[in-house]
Length: 92
Image (tube, rainbow, N blue to C red):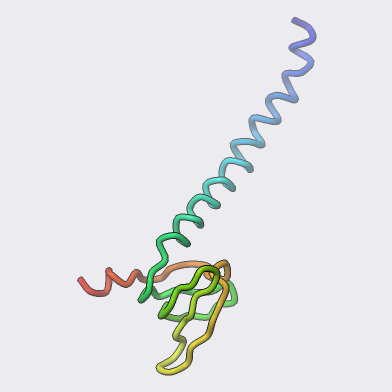
């Protein structure tokens, strides 16, 4: 019993770290992967560099964004930070 009591603070610290650090990071990773897999042509996105654009083409590892009327820029898919507006939301 005394041996278990000596390990109790270590176990409590691990549980606290799990719920405060590890679990939220796993949730963010899962949410980001879901956002990346649901990315579609016509979505308005923001890159990690702050570039706002509209997705005009999706490839395996890259996405082509239209940033102005006739300017197209190719980005890595991982460079897309967030989706501001879904394509199907603007057609309703």
